[in-house]
Each structure stands twice: as structure tokens, then as C-alpha cells.
Image (cartoon, rainbow, N blue to C red):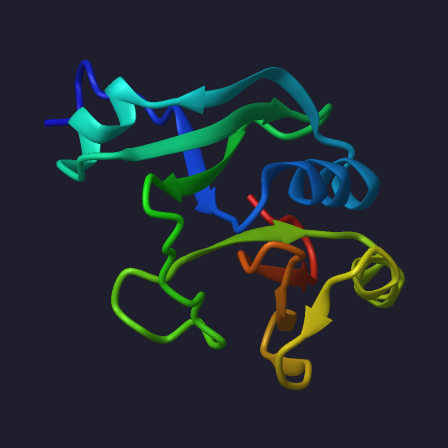
Length: 149
């Protein structure tokens, strides 16, 4: 059923591209494969929103099979909907990172401008916490006891 279908990337919408690139580089080691700025016609066509443009990047990090895409949309009339403050609205999403040192990574997230949304929870098999990055994207930091795969 999934023959010919392959996971390519996960995308997070952010308010501005450069602080988000800096954050994901500093905290998780992602480096841009490329950065596109001012992409207009294709973005307006993809979204069906005339006058919409975007800056975006796709990034890789050693040890992650995932390509992370960050995209900052810009409307021609300079209006932008406010970002969600919390991740539970339909359409909101997050990416989760399994980490070996939970507390150290959460500290790094905060040191690089991220915020913790609530409190860490513990569940059979691990710990988890939701955070918001500079630019407003949501991430989850988790430590799974044993093999995370």
C-alpha cells in the first residue's frame, strides 16, 4: 500500500526565517541545505493565496534521517495572522526530538530563546515536554528509556 511513497520532510511555519535557522542550528545541529528568500509565484500557487510569498529553508543534521523545513510566509499587504500560543488547535503541529540528556536540551532550548509551554510529564517509558521556538513553531523534547526506535 505504501510502495512508492517515502517520507521526505517535516515543515514548521515560523514568523521569521533567520532566528529559526539560528535556533535549530544551535540547539539541534541542523544546517541549511539551501535557503530561498522571496519565493512568490510558486507559494501563491501552492497556497491559493494571491500576493503570498515565503522565505524557507530545508535543513539536515547528523544523526537525523529527517529533513526539517522552516517556512516564513509574508503577505503582500503585510498582514499576518497571529501565531497560536498553544499547540492544540487544528492545523498546529510539532516535531519531536528524542534526546539522551533531557534536562540539558531543555536548558539549551531556553538559552536560545525557546519557551517551555507547561511542565515535563513522565510516562511509562520516558519523559516529555512541549516548547515553543523563536518564530512560534512547536517542538517536543522527549527522552525515551531504552531504544527509541
